[in-house]
Amino acid sequence: MKFGKVFVFVAICLVSLGLMMSPAMAKKPSLDKWKAGFDPSGAKYKCIVSNVSHPVIKGVYAGFAIRDELWKRTNGQIYFDYKPFSMLGGEVEVLNQLQMGAIQGMACSSVASTNLGPRFGLINLPFLVNSFDKLDKFVASGKLFDHFMMAMDHQGIMGLDITGYGNYGWATNDPVKSIADAKKVKFRIAEAAVNQLLYKQWGFNPIVMPWPDVPVSLKQGVITGLDHTPIVCNITKKFEVCKYYTQLNYAQGLFIWLFNKAWFEKLPADLQKTFKEVVRDVCAKIREETKQQEEEQIGKAKAAGIQFFKLPDGEMATLKKQGDAAHQKYAKDINKLYDGDKYKSGNYLKEVQDYMGYKP
Image (cartoon, rainbow, N blue to C red; front, side):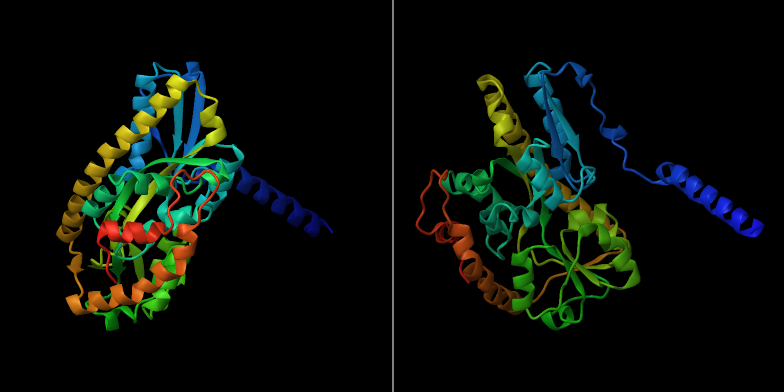
């Protein structure tokens, strides 16, 4: 009996010690590097905004630039409380918080945005808006881009603008110089229907996986490649495992800046105007900086020994032809109109395809 009591006592002590130590030992991301240079306590309005990624990425850092510029232009009336690093949870979870009004905004990745705004899937379609120049052209399209940004309006969520994280391709453990090479790779892809269909059409065997699971899965060999951009792969140290990168440039990775409409509409008219102007001005500047960042990150990766490849033109044509199935499959969802839509297009996807010069 005595031994049993001692064992229980020791077990309780160990559990208690573990509970006390766990919070202290857990490594939480620090925002000290991006701390605001002002005291936000006097702000009349607060806007809590989420993002899942690292602010070293220009498209993510945009949130801090918006925070500072908004504070300046509103004379301290609005505090843009920006929380990157998945501090508020995963994207699907945060989208629900945004819709309910628990938070006021988020910079949502283009792959996750389709959960509440199927029209946003347009940007994931292969070889449609697949370069920085094409993205600039799309943003400048007027009614076409404006209609795109209305994708979640029926959900009570307004889209104001976009930033990006570069061109999608393959980071792999072994060199991929052909489609045959690619078929040997266990690719991690995002939890997005467009991506899953695309890889099926390409004849690959992808593994759908949440982004936080990637580092361990790479090291353990559960996956041997990533569908992602050079910016993200280099900054988040995925090239420490994947020593090769195949530049497909089949799509642009975006962060879509979304805000709760009910919260926004409670702002005074002058602050609404300033809010929109700040977000759009900052996003335009950051998109230019992202172009330079991709060049810089590719240069750094090459200097560190990462080898870059491109598939032969004939094989790229094959991927494009096969990928057109995603355009056809999701045309209905992308073309669907909602009550709040101002632009009543009969075939929105076809208009964008024609405008961008897309030919399967």
